[in-house]
Every structure is written in structure tokens, then in C-alpha cells.
Image (tube, rainbow, N blue to C red; front, side, top):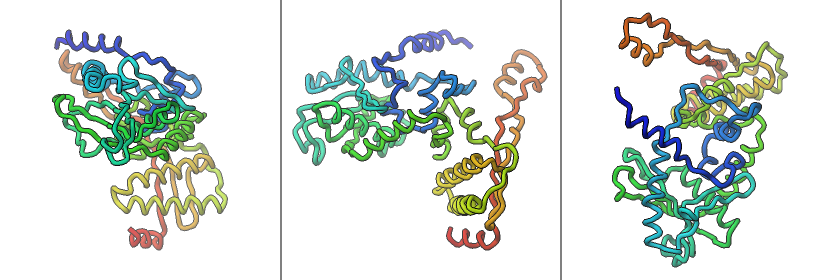
Length: 360
């Protein structure tokens, strides 16, 4: 099948990456700070022989949504805002600036000044930040995306800290990617506590010396963010690192793991709402046992067994299809073995099982 146009678009897209005045590997940006901490750590350390990680060999960095947003902002949103608000619009378009404080940075889409207090929202002041987003029309936008809300707090906080402007709110806009006339706006009041938390989070990520020091938050949250992460294989290897041999646990450690095991079984019994909690406790059990060099633990009414699980054999269907089109080729040559996994088995004594079921 011809790919003449697709190849032209792909080739051109690679020449249109935005050039930033600051080194974005030295700070955590407002759009990054709310993402999985481990993923962000690897992105900031990409290429570092000690702290970096290889990208998944099958990962593709899709430029479509990113280019869509850039073109819309530069060619329509900024000119429209400038035509309407003139010199009241600061830090937009060619005047866009990156604000940096410590390990945290942000490049707002704009700041609207000389506003009449209390007109944009109760308590609004003389300036508000304005943020441009494009949205897939299939996206449910009954409320603003949490990561974008977090981003706006960082933007407002940095502007308040580093300039004379004191934005009180952010106008977060989503324009339908198919019908530009359809725009949803969300008014976000500034919360200084969120900003301070973002600064602390950025510091933790940028000063970490090992990815294992940071939680795989995308995986804990259910894996949705993992679908777009280039480091899922490296993260999986880190999570599955079962210790060698069998060390001996002291009674205090046995009691601590037993308590975590009960929390895990309770979270699992509580249904989908507790899935995140279950993953967090499961991760803590593995990290604690890895640190002690333990694969098995029995005591205090609990048994815990952690082992590696060989990846199952599967087939690269795309390769099989291509080979079948060309000629009858033995499909076994396309056989692949999936990534190895691990298994954590937690058992409670009958009394604990009854108590857990009752609590659930």
C-alpha cells in the first residue's frame, strides 16, 4: 500500500520539534510533574549510562496530538487572543517564557492582565493565566483533566513567585479538535498548597539516585498511563526484581509484613475501588522483602511467597501476516516469548480470612 503522503507528513513532523531556550532535562515541567514519578525520572535521565533506561523497542513516539496542539495554538489561538486582548495578553506566542524555581518549571500559554476583579470568578483579581488545550472529540470533558489542573497551579505559582503579577485563577480551555467553534472553559482558583507540593515533588524526582526510589505510579493507578510510557519494560524489570536466595527474617519484620499482607487481602476483597491501594501495598511488600533478600516468609498467621514467572509464548501476528502475504512461511520462526513476570502469593490463617471478609 502506498505511503507517499504519510511518509511526507512523518518526515516533516520530525523537523518541527519546538526548540526551548532552557534545558528541560534539568527541571520537571508543569505538564510533567503530575505524571508517574518513575517515568519522569527516566525521561529526565534519558541517555545517562547510570541513571537512564532504554526505551521499549516497540515504542512509537506519536507526534499527532502534540503537533495538533502546537499548530492550533500558534496559528489560531494566539492570534485570536491577541486580536481580542492586545497588550493585555502577556507571555504568549513569541513572548512565551519559561519560569524556573529550583527543580520546577513551567511555560504558560499566556497571562491575561488588567482584568476587573470578581468578574471572571468570585475572588478573581487583576490577572489570570490562560491555557490552550485541544481535545479529541471522543473525550468526556465533564470536568477538567486532573493533570491539567495540576499544571495550572504550577504556572500560577511560578508567575506569582517570580514576577510582580499575582494571578488568582487560571482559565483552562479545551477546543474540540474537529470543531474549533466548540470550546469548554474551566476556571481554576490558585491553591498555594498544591504549588508547594509540586515543588517538593519535583525535588524528589530530580534528586533521586535510582528509579527504584520512586514509585511506579502509573502501574499503581491501574496502568492507563503505562499505555503511553516508553519505559514499561524497564519498569517491569524493576518491579519484578525478586531477591536471590532466602535470608532469615527477624520477628519484627515478620510482624510488619504480616500487617501489610492483611491490608493487601482486605484491599483485594474490597473490589475495584481499592485496586490502587492493593497495588501500593503489594509494591511495598515486594520492596521490603527485596531489601531483606527474602522470597518467602511465614509467621504471625501469614505466609508470603514471591517468585519469578516465565513469560508465556506468543506470536507476532503482524509478522505472520506479512509472511503469509508474501508466501507460505513456517510461522514458528515468528514465535516470541513474553516478558517474564512475578507472582506474590499471600495466604492468611482461617481466623484472619474470616475477619477480612467481615470487614469488607
